Length: 195
Length: 190
Image 1 (cartoon, each protein chain N blue to C red):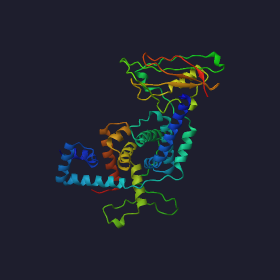
Image 2 (cartoon, rainbow over the protein chains, first blue to last red):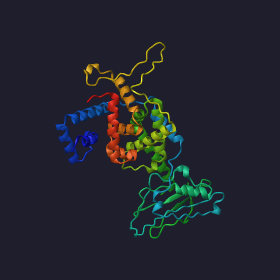
Image 3 (cartoon, chains in turn blue, orange):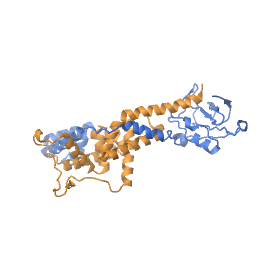
């Protein structure tokens, strides 16, 4: 290894980020080359100065300020599920006239993996599902939006998810438990009142 | 099972987890933000905006990664985005005289401490911090981010490459060039 090659590797050498053979080659070179050793030494000094910097402390209660803004900003957003690229969503919406002004919708999620699903699938909830603010809106478009914001990270063949939508008008709820034996499609299977 | 309650509880659990992360990380986040921006007001803004974005996309946070690393990735992006909005970024050249603002007084030249000299001559730590901070601000932003994450946060090249969305080779190059520039700004002799 010549001086130019060694020079390029010096910072990574100092940081312990070189593979063994490069590390040994640099170590051997700087032990025998005063120019490269000086270069190495000055870079070590520069790094030391930075690592010795004091930690800057915020004034006031920054955590409280941050949390006030965070909570004022509303809920965690629900981006379009990542798995839509390899899955399909079947979304049906059911208008339930007997519920009066409210409309019940449902949205289903579908898994299109071609392999058979294992038995004994457990019901899983991700902590970031529909939030309390995402109660069922009173328009089909908005209901679809609620669904699109539901996110299921790591969704795979062994996982399944159920939804509960709550009608804000009369507090009725609808729970969708997806079938595990056929492609899941959203179907209204029940509706009942709950509090 | 009452799913409605489960939903509400899941949402509360998200918030509660995020709240504890803010309490745990806000000082560290502020420190990095300060080293990136060089002043208190911008550091607070950068910290707050980074946490806000983190909360907005909290459902994308992969729990296998330390929250701090994910936050610094967001912070790096916010920092670069904000800089693009503000083309005239304030920076202090170490070679440029500072105006004291007082009439009749000569401009003060920034003095580079003699690090090779007697330790007794090394200026007070607070002033040393200022010199280093000014030198950091004189670095191109991408070099600055890499140097701060490596030398102040102690992150590995792999973690920095994730935070900066670039290859490990790019991290290596940015760090090396950043340190060499910093060395020349600080006058660290070889």
